[in-house]
Image (cartoon, rainbow, N blue to C red; front, side, top):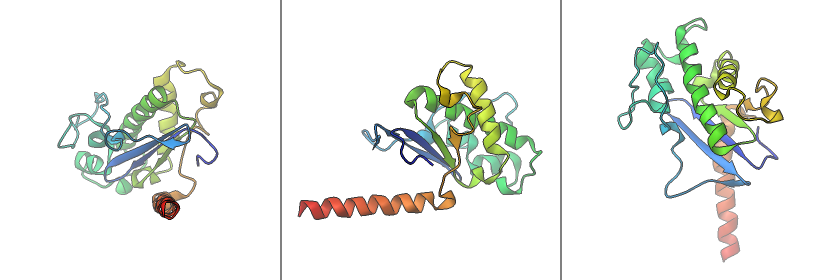
Length: 181
């Protein structure tokens, strides 16, 4: 979904929330790996579990929006919740905050959102709409002008993205090791 781009952000929303950032064609890595799931968000006033479920942080993205948080909050797994359940509006609110933070912090050319919670087809359009509202026109770029249809997207490889990425990283490591010999 980000082939040919120099910068993107990937979020996986499932049991937890994880993510990665590519900038200038390189994966950002610092002191430790990025912990994008632990970005702090503003709890929504209609949230029956505003502290979230993270044992380390009150109000982090993972604690508020991962599948475990949805199940604890609503008493059902995400895939069991009907499309008209208020869970999806709340989930979109939190994930839109995460996307808006990514836009202003990393200025990616695209945001890719995968993982089990993202399987509900109503969620991605809601996230796009709410991200647009949160940005409020602050970031001026043509990529953000079309309702974010091509800016916040699902993984091009679907649920295979993580496995394919791991294989590619392993292949690169083997190539580097063979060059060093």
